[in-house]
Amino acid sequence: MKTSIKFILFASIFTGFLGPGISCADGLSDLQNALHRLQGTNSISAELEYISVDIKGEGDGKIHTHGQVKVLLEDDEHGLRVHYSREVLEKMEQEALLKAQDEEAETKTLNAIDGITASELHSMLSVSSSLFRVLGQAQFLQEEDTYLHGKQVRQLRFSLPIEFFISDKKIRSYVRKFKAEYLIWIGDDGTPLESRIEFSGKGRVFIFFKISVTGSASSQYQTVGDRLVVVHKQSASFNDTSLGVFEYSELKTLKIDRIH
Image 1 (cartoon, rainbow, N blue to C red):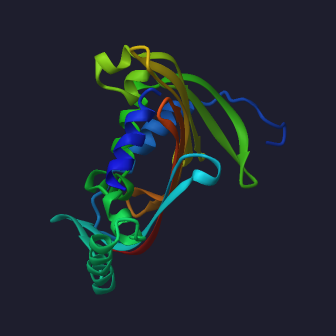
Image 2: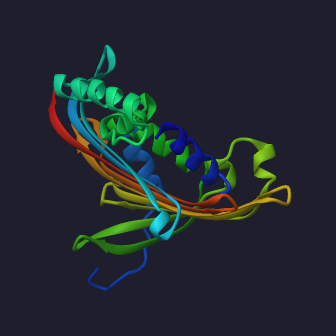
């Protein structure tokens, strides 16, 4: 799974009563103020469930690789800790043995562990800094009043440059077309409720390798004490390349246990 994830990431870089209307409020300032306010460091613990699906090929030749695991997270003045239960550790050992005997054996736990990184886990438990980085590169386009789950909210629309996804200048030179949009829904006081990124791109390396990629990532947020936390994050990408078709999706769900 780890190799597959790296390939997908490499491929991806080529990669209201009056009804809805333009809002007069300064939603961007409200959002920035809310992010400043929600950078707390109160102690928190939560259970994370991570599910992933990696698909290679097309039609009857599709190969599915699944990942699934639950871990306990704790973040406090001592830092971030990830706890693996005895059951998870035993599954990892069993799957490692199965993999040694049969390279095609199903190893959901090991596959999922490969998809968990400390930086992303920390960001889920305290996401304000990550959102500031997005806003630092995004170009504000529009604010409008709309509805989210039956409640009136404000939607902010941004465009994102290719540099947000690809830091390497040489790799960016292979990209022929690229487009990315960022949407974030905020409450009355500017607190983020949900966000969504959509992107698409096409590129070519020399004359023999072509790639077309589309993808999206959506997040739902919750205020926990003085923190802004990601409680639901879902992403997917579809990559059509000279080497074949590759699809990848993942879901992270966070259940807050307690705060201190």
